[in-house]
Length: 441
Ligand SMILES: [Zn+2]
Image (tube, rainbow, N blue to C red; front, side, top):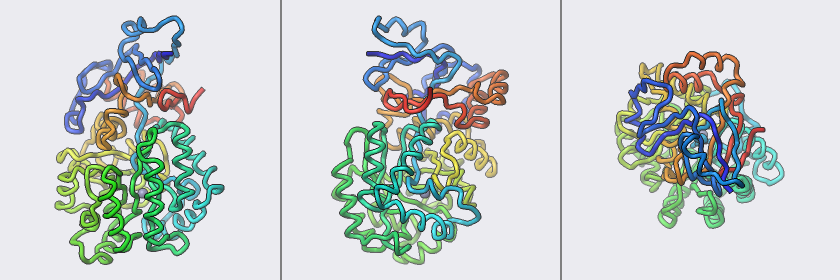
């Protein structure tokens, strides 16, 4: 059976790129460009979890047969689901711990709280709340740091798999630091191996080797990570890079064999086109060019960076170098799961650096741009024929102020800017994952 969803349609198209969106000024509200489309009375047709048609309602409604279904979202906006490329599944209960910078915040709040998530019972409620909040905010895909234990990490995979979410996740590897949280390196790698074998490439799940950050690793751990990536080259890697000045100083002091922070990961075989690095705020010129040359993925988290006072990411440089830029919440240092709020903070951070990070560029970095960066642009990120049906239904009328503001919206940029500047979870009327409604009436 087919289901047609009718409403305004906004999507990027395959021709869109970080650079070709920056500086584009559409002269109308409704446009159909090779890079993006905004339809006044549009529709998508979903069949077996995938999009089989997209276009003006008047043109594609004739594809329906008598037994097919129509869902009327007229007056609302249908857009691609958000991709959050950096979250911690174990930090919901410690979110909004205040008043500290990165290393103190980790030691005083996060590490003690994460100890609880290594058993199934303590985790289930936390992840259930997290997933529901993600859907409520229109996020349909995540890259996530999971508990350090096999049972804890496996449970999160089980739960996202039940929703058939496209996810990239792994057990957090910590072998140095908080005594109650660390695992010995060999045990960590056995857990990684077992999770990779069970989940990588199964349904919509992918495995990411997840050394928390260099400071939570020993030389032995990094060596084992290198071996793991050599024997599992199709796995992802995720970690943190150059988030905070003290963190960088401690890292280069600990690994004195490396000339800078990035080289700790490079020499461990952890920097390639499937490596997702959180933050990347304080990169040297050399680190910038090596990250781009190796096609590594930037998971920038402006809400978290502002919250912990970590610093201002250089968006201008990312655009100039055509870096694989994605945006993320870094939940729970980021105190929101709303990618609308993340886009808003990205705009402000760029403005503090006297750079205008365009509206289309920011939306792209949360949708198709993120999908392409992660190598899954053929599956998700836009509403195009053949894509998996992950989408959001926005209802701006649920926010009186935004609704009023949009009445005077004269072009697409202004419309999307207002949505990301004034919107929040109230305007997410429904969220669909693989064609199934996971949030909304
Ligand atoms: Zn993080």
